[in-house]
Image (cartoon, rainbow, N blue to C red):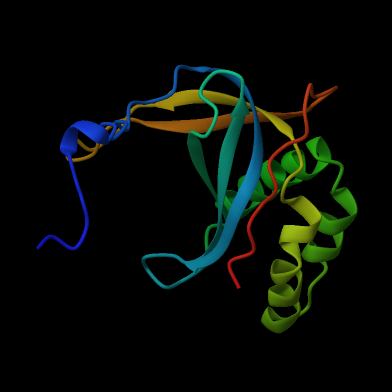
Length: 163
């Protein structure tokens, strides 16, 4: 006897991973993670943005901020982009305090409080398409700019704490 009833006709097909068209979308941050770079010489902040609609609601866009890198130019670009995001969601104070961290432990404390500071804050993301330089990988979406949202027709979805 079968443990559960299953009919493939009753299940929707999985949505593909097609690129989002280059455009401006309203999104909220739903996940964050501080990760070590592949070479082990730095760290980056990986954020997940979820589009809240109306078109493409639920789709995700991933963005990395290479904030701790041996290449100063890479770190400066990432810091500027992250500051622009913080300005767009009115979280500049959080960002300023985060940059003043004097130790990895202090920085981790700011990162642990990040959901309260930046999650669930609607932001306009200007999404473009970044062509892959390596034929092994496909093109991907890249956030080119952030802007404050003037007014929402409905409340954004609440983020879920991973703990």
